[in-house]
Length: 183
Image (cartoon, rainbow, N blue to C red; front, side, top):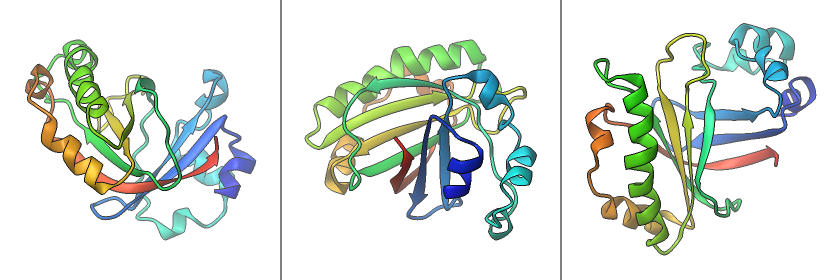
């Protein structure tokens, strides 16, 4: 984390550690200036520049998503919050424009309304991987913050189906916690 802050100098930066699953975690970097961010879009640049040894501890197959963020429910993200991250894939036959518009117009309101009605529901953010130069492995991700695991379970039980599900593959959900490097 200190090497990223020193060399990459993002405007915001956090790391999420997952409790289980195929990924140990993810790093999220935000840049106000797209031109400044462009040099970090490729993994090779980041690994070469940092030289901190961290990449040697990984499987050397990071997934890089360059996303446009949509803050759906603006709420607190306290240090002890439970964070559920969903990695979302678009069905191959689904039109990308319909996929992304349905995500915001159909699915986001469904998640947001039930989150607001769930005691302990805090914040909901959707990131669309629409800024990549190539078609990424994942179309984006959703991040939902809760006061505790009981709130997360209660929210998931309240969610109903919506039209977005016909465009998306079943998402992989990962529970974890977030460490903020730069707020």
